[in-house]
Image 1 (cartoon, rainbow, N blue to C red):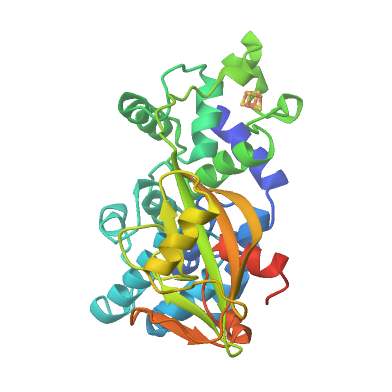
Image 2 (image 1 turned 180 degrees about the vertical axis):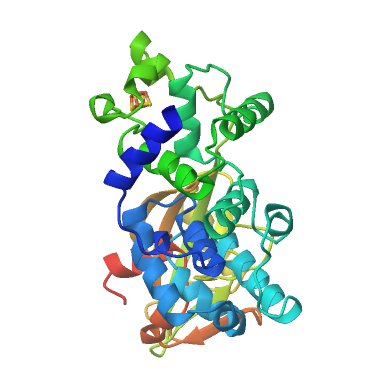
Length: 349
Ligand code: SF4
């Protein structure tokens, strides 16, 4: 039986990862949230820091949101961290710290989708429910040479049924981990290592020599271009930041004051707008220069950022949301990766 072959392969070849040796749903949840959209080598150090600082759901619930965002900095997809905190508070305050123990109840928690709910339910409670992440989609699509797009509604339904049918109901936790591990280590997106694959004799894509054609995806994602002019103000050894609000990228992270445009604009337009806002006007003792230009790619956005260093003699009149701090304090704040890149490149932190 294919499932047994897969299981034997897994037991011999699995990586020894810290969240594999536990059935603690909190630890499994934490690892799954960190590893969504993140590869193991990048996610592992974050997991280790989080689990050390917040060894229980109670500790995570009691932490401040700013502290969590600071530790999360660099992982991206910040709503994951916010939702994780909200859910930890709910479990701590309303469920007496006890994690729900079945798929249906876990799925109701904020920030937990079908994949994570299935992972927690099967890994922690051995519930016979199949996980379906990018790795599993790829293995199944190739194994059965399925050309239904994995990101279409009908494709998702089809793969959900198939994954559940393929599940080894006697060993759901091990089976799910084996599928994910096979996708990560052997059935890689580019250049799958078919010679090392335990399923090679039954793989239709391999037998047809069409591994690279599966899985099929429909391209329907629109990417939005955004143009940011950032200002690193310097006045009396202080600089200015603000906390980003809901309804846009990087909610709750701290950022430099910026102007946003719908296209690239020249310096004259930027200077005019700075004057209109009373943020800056050039004099002998005040200067502004472009320190860095860069492009930053997010899932659905492409940000073209210009960073200006602005030296002033007096603090400009700005809204209450702006706070002035010594630049050495910037390290304490959770900031977007784009800003971190600028500060490090300019040796400002
Ligand atoms: Fe993937 Fe190759 Fe294994 Fe098929 S034989 S499942 S394509 S690694």
